[in-house]
Length: 184
Image (spheres, rainbow, N blue to C red):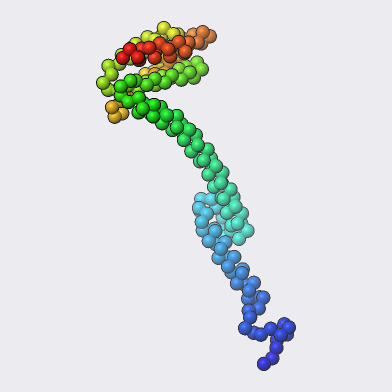
């Protein structure tokens, strides 16, 4: 047996050219798989097939876009969760109170007020009394709505100050509303 000129290695080991060729082919296959994962609307319209470098650049841009989108969606999710927690805390208070006594939540939003009142179906509640308390405290009701869910009625009122420089006495309005609710 003759030894080859590469320092006595036998022919059973692949040479460097074959190893490099296999590596390039593997990289080409991986690049084409990566390019196939990028949506076609992200490619720039061209008549020629993009080079591997262009495909890698497009993939990097697309991945960066996806990361930004994920971050935006996470922020939206957190905001929604905070909103849901506020709503669920209101629902928990309602559930813990049960149908026997109404639940009142008054939010001062600066120049406007939001009132959420939850009562049971068996409560004969007079909404005009709530509106008159708002008016006596310097607020004008701009919208009022209600919905019935299960055995509860959800009243929502939005009011704003009649005179913006005077404002609305929300603490006094809240006290009077609490007294009104206790009387039922």
